[in-house]
Image 1 (cartoon, rainbow, N blue to C red):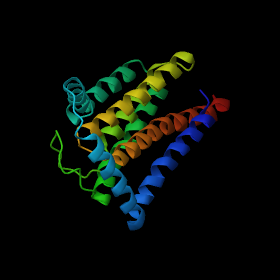
Image 2 (image 1 turned 45 degrees about the horizontal axis):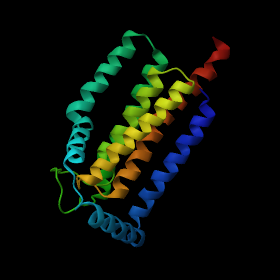
Image 3 (image 1 turned 90 degrees about the horizontal axis):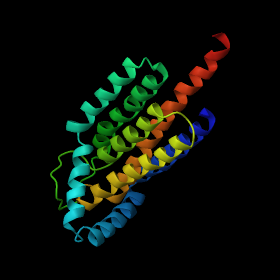
Length: 210
């Protein structure tokens, strides 16, 4: 409900993800990150459990273009029918802020994916598109559908938990390195919260003239 706090949170998340983008662009720090990610991969990838693997495949589908784009269209139509202009604007902006960055950043960094995975992927590894889209969509969904208050806060925490679960399953499947998903969640969350803050600020700025 307070765009100033939302802006601060969004800036903090942008700073977290941005610091990783900068570190990945510097050869010396990228080597350190690569070594850390390889250590995490070697430690975690051999650990596999049937039920968790099934959940991970399910999360992979929820974050895929095959599911997430039809879902976004349904939410967009719903908000349009409700004539909720502010919510619709925040929802669309969250998508417009986050989605173009995925392909652009993947192409710019060209980071190879882990050597062995349970899923086949052809695009670059950094950042994780599933993590960006999952965080942006889940958090924006709560913001646009739930009124400010304790219920929204609780659901925002649940949405953040969903985004982290999505990120964790990408590492579990061997589709991404740990820093790929960490940067992706921070970036997606920053886009969702930042979009809502921008819309809220515009509405507040217009109120005296209404």
